Image 1: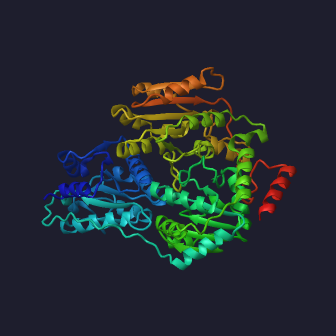
Image 2 (image 1 turned 90 degrees about the vertical axis):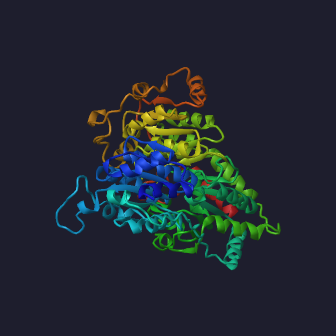
Image 3 (image 1 turned 120 degrees about the horizontal axis):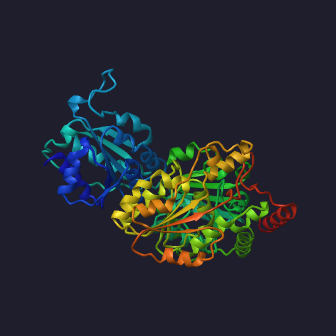
Length: 584
């Protein structure tokens, strides 16, 4: 069997539903095999978009996705998406074409021998779980199987195989289509389970922090059952935004540097914190760690190295798949003998949510908040199975603060790498793999980063709602410049060299229906109804914001997580302290 045929057949056998990529000279054998096999292939118009599409689809499904590109610039264009996959723990197999082995420079001191020859393996080694140059036909079968196993085992992540053209066209004598199911890691004893349940049961003010490891549907259901049995509030990280229903009485908000105030207040005040599949990085805890020094912290994560290298030291570390951990916890509670009701704590949570919800914050600084009001209207329009794909910048944190993700909805974004231009390709990848309607939320800056992918949206008639929040600036950096650079807006607005495109005209060029709104529009609700009723086809909505946009609350560098800007007044501080003291 021809090597390229084997690769495509093997991917089909293990359940890969489609392949993302862009063709080129050094990858043509694999593309020919994709064509002959009638594999579902998604043509992208930049390799970076292909890598985002594969990574986003993996974030949604938890299953292996595949992206392919040619050598040289094709391979290097994948790098940002490879890093996104690495930092956000998504299983993606990247396959790059390479020049013939007899044109490859290996250890020669020359910079390059073959046309577009680039040592992509050396370049991506720090941001992959495994990468290899497959330069012998007899290695292909074992390397492909090894790469797939590594990508899908333990803490998932990207792998890359660089395959020269002469290897792609070689004959494989013993094609093996076997697949070894990854083993699930769980080093938690029944004794430890009993200990954790006891600590939570006896805690006065417990809190669960759910991260990206809790977003899968089967994990989410287990988490809901567990939290309800012990009546423990659940806060979420940015990557875990969709891990717990945001309309649930026990939902304790999105936490972190731009988190909901009520979530951060509880994070600082809790006496027992159960961390599930989250990293406790500085964007979550802030740089001032005093609130974390005097509490019981139980940390459950697959990655032992992540827990060992944490800045937060007083933790009980449990290396385990979160799903298995929650299953064992729920089994221990299933006899019904252990059940806790925390009326005062749940009442306090409800009070804090009402008083310090996201639409209250900018009023403290007398700043305009129409962009907050519009995102709340968008949130209310979401269908029960929609997937919200969020770009990077102010729009990302605004969406995380305001969008209310319910049971079947998902919130997909890039956390660790955080590249602008992520959301539109993400929506394409998710729709092609899972058939879901996606709602893209991006700023004018991110929209321009991968705008060429509207070609795929239009050609495939992908049902995506693209919402462009156009403030004609790079809002998050401008707010940073306000805080730390005396409002010198270098390269962030029209006065300093940054300009936004007319997204409606761009959509029109690709044959996509578009609408626009601004603060003075009289038909806001009517237009939103039209946008969200466009089922089965793409539509773009540009929301024009003619003022400098701000996000609140925001954590400054030199403050603990419960001291967000804008400041609360003395009366509010006293009221919150009194309520917390009554419980704890």
